[in-house]
Image (cartoon, rainbow, N blue to C red; front, side):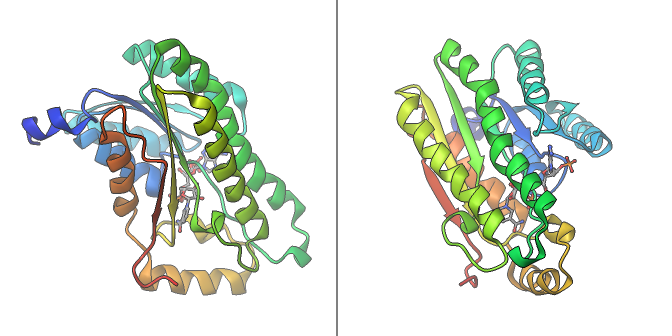
Length: 252
Ligand SMILES: NC(=O)c1ccc[n+]([C@@H]2O[C@H](COP(=O)([O-])OP(=O)(O)OC[C@H]3O[C@@H](n4cnc5c(N)ncnc54)[C@H](OP(=O)(O)O)[C@@H]3O)[C@@H](O)[C@H]2O)c1
């Protein structure tokens, strides 16, 4: 670690909460920010994985805590924010990253998947905002980073509900930005295809096989998205990176 670089980075010493930190983009972001000197508050449902990530961060001299968090529970998100504030005395950044993508053709009427997608991807972000916004107001600073998707910019067949959940994240983020005032930053990160296990839960075999081929062929490493997140955080307080779209070069 380069001490001079850390001091100038705008990441060192920040208390940063990440939802969906147990794998993929959230996990890569936790390691990236910990290496830059952030103090992490990690949430997800798989606590065994969170424990391993925290142990690894600590073994490299970093600081991190975790709590079992289901973003479909408003209480869980409030508790995680509270835990972070108690431990670190403040919350600088909330990264609303948790998400699911059980995509399928609408004709299959997988209504439970539709509900879960909205509950996690859209309502989960709203619960994160509800938990952190009063703290950010009281502190007089704060930064929301909401993970959307290129599916939140353009809808394609079989992804109607997932895409809708991510369009909503972008709309809510833009409204939040306009209401946030001069001291709270709001960033949307819209990744294209990323090499994570995100598509493992796709119930439709044909759709899953198609996306697996694309992911394995051209997907971005999760670390690339972590880098975009770090870029938004490390800007000076008066610089608000509002939206980053990050795709593999080969993605249409
Ligand atoms: N991979 C891609 O191609 C891609 C592209 C664009 C956008 N994204 C977005 O990137 C974000 C992260 O996805 P990823 O690619 O890193 O996939 P991932 O490895 O499957 O990570 C998803 C994370 O969300 C968590 N999660 C799921 N349901 C949750 C719930 N109810 N409460 C709390 N946490 C929950 C999971 O943790 P637990 O299971 O332990 O709770 C996991 O840590 C998502 O918002 C996704 O929509 C991904």
